Amino acid sequence: MKILCIGDSNTFGFDPRSIIDDRYLEDIRWTGRLKGHDVINWGINGITIPRDPSVYISLIKRKEPDLVVVMLGTNDILEGADAMQTTQRMCEFIDAISAASKPILIIAPPVLRDGEWVEGSEMIKESESLGDLYRQAAADKGCMFADAGKWGIDISFDGVHFSPEGHASFAEKIEEFLDNIK
Image 1 (cartoon, rainbow, N blue to C red):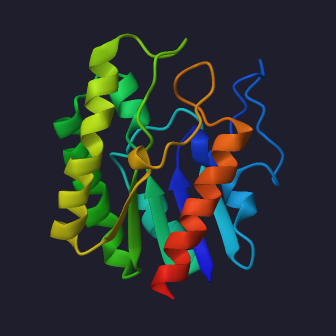
Image 2: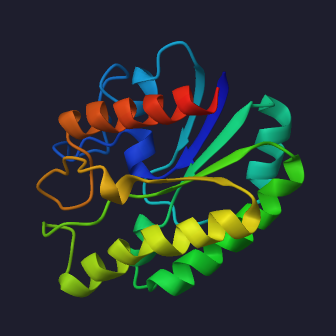
């Protein structure tokens, strides 16, 4: 299966121990662990849910994936948006990329944790709310849904980024999901 993964630094594979935006090696990143699939990793560090989806529509049309996986929203919360605003942005983005007529899997990102990048319990609470809100949005938009907030993904010291173990367990959960939709 050809899978286009649209996401932020956790899709990119950012290594929080680096000082110059390095990423984990491909065999550590969750996108690199999806064996038997042609994975296009379109993770971008620091990205919020795009307001101008034209690049993504073009990318989907050009790459012609069998499945588009979208895991975004963490940076929106980190930049001060609440869960409702973030979900509205996600709905607008999904509406736009749906024009490319490819199946879409929306993943609610893992819940933020106390750490160097997470400023208080309000951000954690807002990120926790994304699961239920994204589930409803996916149902409304006719998309598949997975809630990584329920997967117990290991997060690094910064409260945001996957540890190597987190990438491994995330990949396992995605593989299980993909096996169930075949």
